[in-house]
Structure formats: structure tokens, C-alpha cells
Image 1 (cartoon, rainbow over the protein chains, first blue to last red):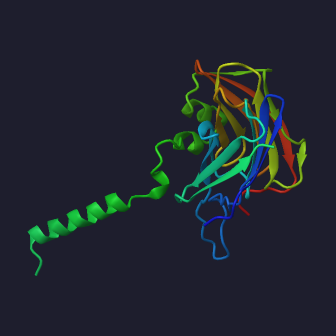
Image 2 (cartoon, rainbow over the protein chains, first blue to last red):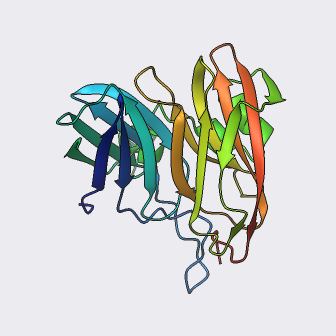
Image 3 (cartoon, chains in turn red, orange):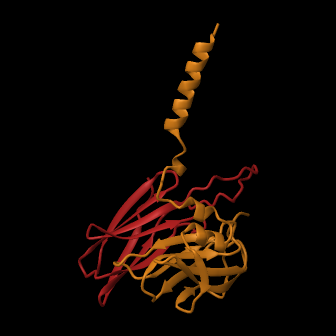
Length: 103
Length: 151
């Protein structure tokens, strides 16, 4: 199981800025190992976010996103105390969800 | 001794196994594989549903002028235009140009940032796909001192 994400959600005005740091290898499928074999691609394909249980954000990623990816987006109408849950799913079918409270 | 009927039966079993085991990486219907496999900026935009492509001042791409480490290049895409369906970040000279595709809804602002890998100095693009199928883009040149793809 992958390590937990670090999520920080800060409200400013009528929106909340959400910053997420995920822990993932994000192998591009371009690299070769010491014996010259290509390292197979392993990367996060889908990222979704929920605000108080309602889907608000989704994204599709390719292998060109950096290792241990960073993501920033802003949710309209989110106030302090609201819950933001972020989920990712990689191309091996692994998935992880973490939740944070807007401050 | 194996007769023809048995051989056929075995083939069917193998075919069945293959079908159920499958290839997990292709199991997600939602993942737009065509757009991520496309090699050029234009092809990716078309695979994501764009019909016409034009440069626009209303779309912004943010990124450094010079990136020391191509493995971690902070890139952002944003637009103030209404009616945006997807926002995409692309790196022209990467093996596949599309880095990330964000789906814009009413509940989130059309302003996203992430970090990308870049193989070499290249133009980076923010492409906004509008609800009517128009693609609007903005670009910026990013110089990379140390590549981050392969090696």
C-alpha cells in the first residue's frame, strides 16, 4: 500500500485552495535499468476530489507528471471545516484516498 | 494421445483465461489513452475532442524560464474564460506531449498546477478545450539544464 498523501486545504474568500502531495514512483516507461531492460511505466492515471462527499474535480495524468506528484486546485464555495477527499488510481489498479479538513 | 476435440477444448480454456486475466492497464474506460499516446500537441488536442485550434491570450501557462532539474518542472495552466471543459498541460518535445488533463466543473476554478518531467528544453502549452469543441492555447518556452525523462 502506498504512503499517505499530504493534503492542505486553505480557505480564502469564497474558495479553498487545495494542495496535494502524493507519494508515488511515477515511472515513465522510458527509463532502462542496469541490464538495459526498459522499466515498465507505473504512474497515476486518475485523480479525483470530493468536497463534502460530492465530486468536484477530476483529472487524467500521463507518465510525464513528476515523481511524488504535486497538485494544486481551488474549490469554489468551500468553507473552513469542510471535508476535501482526494483519490488517485494508478495504471496497476492501486488506489488510495485521503481526506483533509479545510482550515 | 490428444485428439482434435481435446485440443479445441484446451484452446478455449486458454482463451477464456486470457480474457478474464486481461491487461489491467487497459481496464479503465474513462482514461483517454489516445490523447496520452498522441505524440504532438495537435494530435493530443484532437484526441481530447478539439475541432479547431487557435492561440488565445485568455489562457495562461505558468512555469519557470529555466528549469535546473527536468524531473521536476512546476507548470500551471489557468483561464478566466467561461465554458471550459478540459484544461491540458503539454510539453512539446516529450515522447508523448500530454502531461495532464484536468476536467473543469462548476465547482472548481479553471486554475491548476502540478509538476512535470521534461526530457529537454521545449515549449510548454496550456490548452483549454471549450464546450463547443474549440481549443485555445498559450505557450511558453522552458529551458532545461538536466533532462528528466529516461537516462
